[in-house]
Image (cartoon, rainbow, N blue to C red; front, side, top):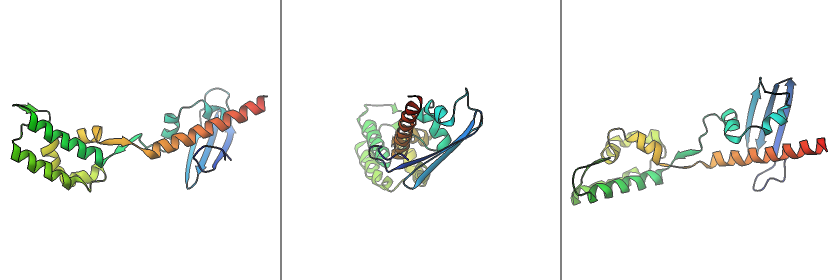
Length: 179
């Protein structure tokens, strides 16, 4: 049990060395648990030694494979939409990456419609506003929104902090054993 990790609840770590080069780990903190099994650990490491040699990105791939370091942000999408309208209004002539130049009335109308995007909480919900997003960002708007309408994912960073605390505790334990 790890109780001294800054700004984290107590962390329980269960290590199981099942056979040479085979082991599993279960980590829990508050109401979340993560589990991983390795059936082919390199070297003659215990699961604790092996786990300490892995970086958090690799571990998260085992603990929570669908978790990403970035997530959709409605705030970022709305800022991007406003930037698009302003850029299209300001350009002198021709075609910008998101569409043709807008006159004053078109820009005002499109800018006012951006408020309709306020309730979108995920990229899949954005499909309900596909016509507006197409007008703002072009035919394949989802590529731009998926790349640029994002913010750091607090769940990813939380799990990184938990993994760092486990790494530190396991290393300290290994140093105590070898001392």
